[in-house]
Length: 99
Image 1 (cartoon, rainbow, N blue to C red):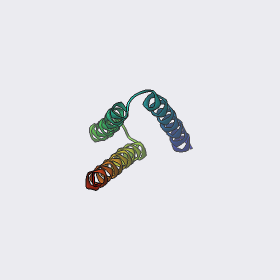
Image 2: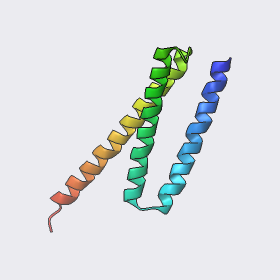
Image 3: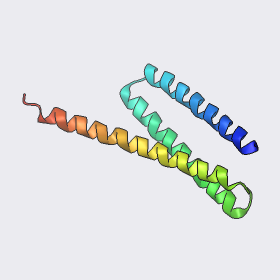
Image 4: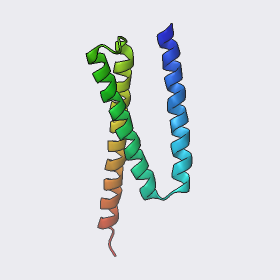
């Protein structure tokens, strides 16, 4: 039952992070929004690495939290790569536009 509560608290954290990034991105430039997204993905990946290290040293006994951190990092990275691919596609389309 504790695992279910942990998942609920993680969902709340994800929603809070999403709200914060949306409000900060609306205030800044597009470049700043991209930089912040890259930093957030980096933080999530570092958290996953720490979770793996803690599990391997025996500090954390719960494999579920480790797998959840790894999947969160993977999804964040995949989302970032999708955004990058869309940006490159848009840039290429603009460059093909005759002047």
